[in-house]
Image 1: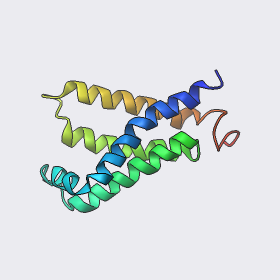
Image 2: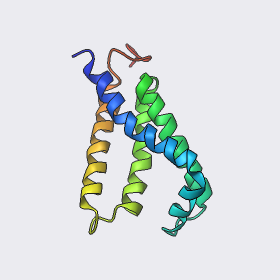
Image 3: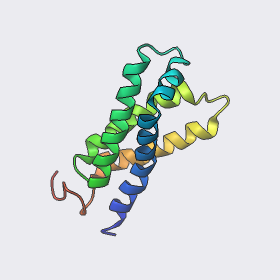
Image 4: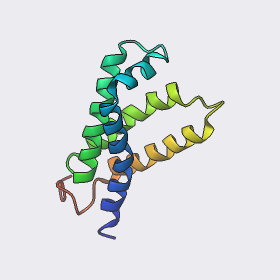
Length: 122
């Protein structure tokens, strides 16, 4: 059971790390996607999204400030779900994001586990 939290953190983080890298390398295509939803300051929101995804992912993988990393990703997932996954047309996307939020909440509630840079810290 010692390795389960590490594996869970890595599995959760890989999705968001991949997304953060894709949004960073395709930044000029990502900004119009945000603007298409009528959101203000799309460049700022895009930069914040990339930062939250990358910082949150690395934090989870390393187990360093993993609770904060999980919170950053949750703070990304909530508006992403509300603006880009309409429940009427994308129920699967909404449910997937709720499941991810649930997994991230477990990290917040129980910490990163024994194999982490924060091991033993409350």
